[in-house]
Length: 147
Length: 141
Image (cartoon, rainbow over the protein chains, first blue to last red):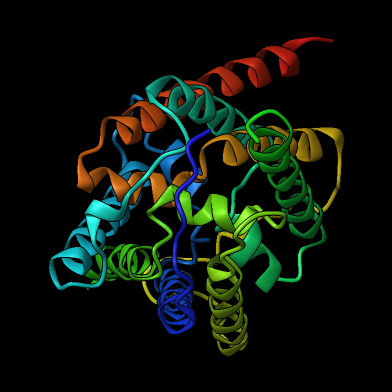
């Protein structure tokens, strides 16, 4: 597995978290929806393009615009992007993430931020599970077989 | 206004993921690597996001409905079952292999890397497969 060092920037991380919190609050205040990205993305994978499709599409368009604008404004250097492996690892990981979040009804944002903010026991169990498994996976790939 | 609120919600989310560096999967992998060169960034992103959302949701507590919709559409299920834990474990495996979870992967599409496209296309396939599996098992007696 490819390993590249990254620098810890606490203020940028806190600012980013705060913006995500504002997003989640605005989405709940305006449309009563949970800002869970796996559910929002999953809801786009349907044939009928009704109101349920449209709100999700608008949110995702905003998400893409926000990422692009932040990088353009100097808040992120796209050249710093680096991956653990090639496209085959990426595809295998994507398949697992897509299936796992659909079965487990949520991801880092839906369970880890919105669910925990609602004090949901399901979200606490899910968050501890995916954090634990992801940590163990990195330990195995980087230190047991990749080390 | 209702449509603008949706776009702005997405915009804030994408800006947050990008300014914090979460769109770079290596930064997330370095967070998950407690035995290596640990980068605590993700912990600060989660803490900041959780704190603001916690306060934000409570400020909405007194309202009976959102501004532009008839009702709050919150998850109703409270049971911790094998599907929840198994799904979270499968997700954790994919997350640990790549450093990508759904939000950062989608946002990172704008940087045009082929690995990101491979991840997002496969993620769509995985979600559809799981959905097919769930509707089949629901149809069984």
